[in-house]
Image 1 (tube, one colour):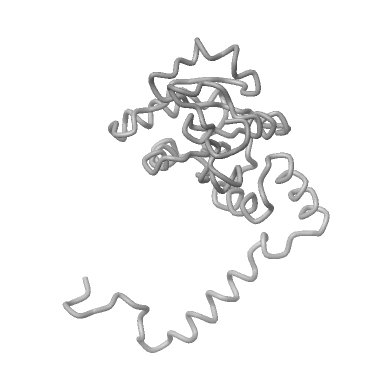
Image 2 (tube, helix red, strand yellow):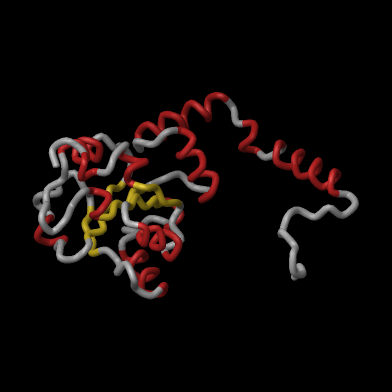
Length: 193
C-alpha cells in the first residue's frame, strides 16, 4: 500500500521503459489487432443487424468473447411507463429492424408482462425487472431467469436509469449501453411518444 502523498501513478522504477515497450508489443500482437478484412466486413454487417455502430459492437465482443445473441431492454429504455404503456413508434420500428437477435424487455412495476404481451409484439419476451435497490444476489437470480437459454456473456443490457447498470454486473452480461446512445435520444422524447 502506498504511503501518504502518493498519487497512485505508474511506477517510476528502473525498467519502466522496457515494460511499456513489452506491453505495447504484446497489445499489437493480439489476434484482434490483425483481423482479416473479410472478418471485419462480416462483423460490420452483424453490428448493423444489431443496430450498433462497429466500434461498440467490437468493444462488447472483445470484452465478452462472444457474439451478441440478445438485447435486454429496461422499460425505462423503451419509454414504457405506468402512464404510457405503448412503445414510441421510432422504438418499435428500431426493434422490428433487429435481425438474428432476441429482444427481451425487463418491465418495472406496475407494468405487467402478461397484460402487455399483446401490445409489445416487437419484443420476443417480457419479464419483470429486478428491483433497482435489490440485493446483488437477488439481481443475479433475476438476470439468470431472463437469459432465455442464452449465455449471459452473449446478452447486452440497454437501460436508462443509473441503477440499471448494476443488473449487467450482477448478471455477468456482455455489456451495458445507455438508451440514449442506442436509440439516439431518450425514447420518451422520440416521435410517437
